[in-house]
Length: 319
Image (cartoon, rainbow, N blue to C red; front, side, top):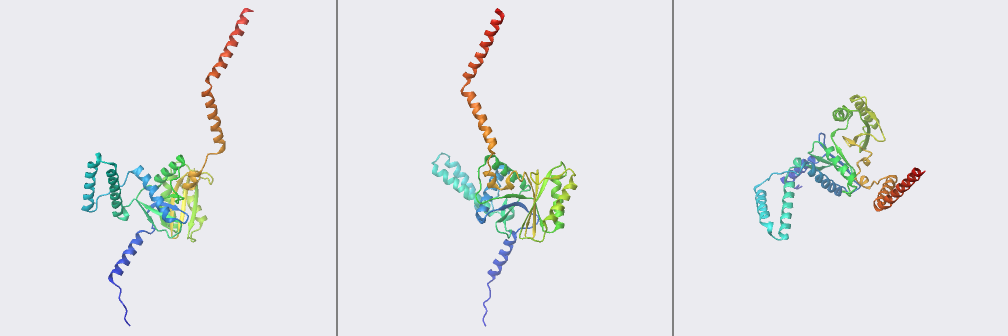
């Protein structure tokens, strides 16, 4: 019986795909952002990339990349020359220069290695739960900027991305690792001034870790950091986020967690002011408008009061 042998290229591609798949998997020690969506993962990743890159460029500046070959450097030099030449040319040439600039930036971005990228999606193995690995040392700073901006403007910036949580610690899903990693993370937030806190526990495809055990152990660590720390389940200053995803535990700190609608970006943009405050503002505005539109009436009434007082004083002096 004749058996056809596999080509060497098959084994080469198989090993390459295995290495590539390993680079994109969730693993301990990385930081990033946990995103949730509803059945539109590709669109959610696109929303997250766009939002994170926009605010990261605003805070930290755009990523500077070096050319990887001589062709890119030649293209850049030609592009710079063309920019100088097209300053006094038609708008069509300016548009072509802008397009070339965007193309070169995209080439530089995709020619970088995976570890050099500022944001890179990795596989969590759970539907509608996406993790974006980041080279940023403090993901909370970026998420705080995004949440504050959305809360102030109420302008919706995403369509498919629902929740955006910063993740500071990823470890194996066993109690020893969870307590040791949490002890280091909680030291930064609870050791100095007393804070109110709550512990938010969620699980995805994990039934080995018990919710009550995690909450009790973390609360004990927080109380040891500062006896003044107190639990507040309704409106805590800091929420300790614990997300169990298969064999991993993801932890982070989320300030004003319930005020910002559990970091749900769509809910933040959809929130409206209470009706009482709106009515009070409208009444104050109408009163101010009346004062501005009828200043003469107010002066006339004041003058009438003054004249009556003067007449009254004159009559008393005659008597």
